[in-house]
Amino acid sequence: MSDQTYPFVGWVLGGTFIPKQVEFISRRCWYGQDWHESKHGKDYRFEDVFSTKEQAIAHGNEKLKAMELRLAKQQTSIAKKRKNLAKATA
Image 1: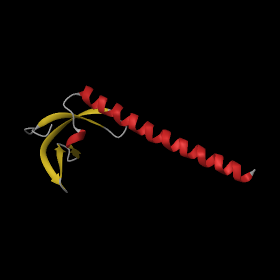
Image 2: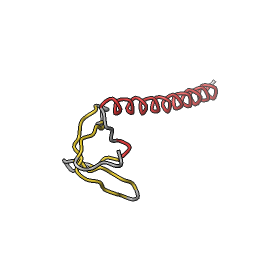
Image 3: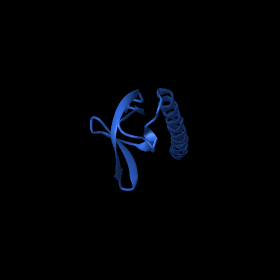
């Protein structure tokens, strides 16, 4: 959505991953990254703004899968550490 004319309406994921429709009024550049400025003054990265609700939901599902993979790796590491502590106390 980088070649947008303003204003336009796009979809973003909120902090709790609830998709919401937002009106964007301008483009900003901060530290080499492009951002969309919303009507309410909040800035969103270009890659976090979607043209449809379905695209936003799909992106949210991808982010959740990545989070689950990171958590699975952490759980494996914790289990190994717990095993090492059990061996040390025996």
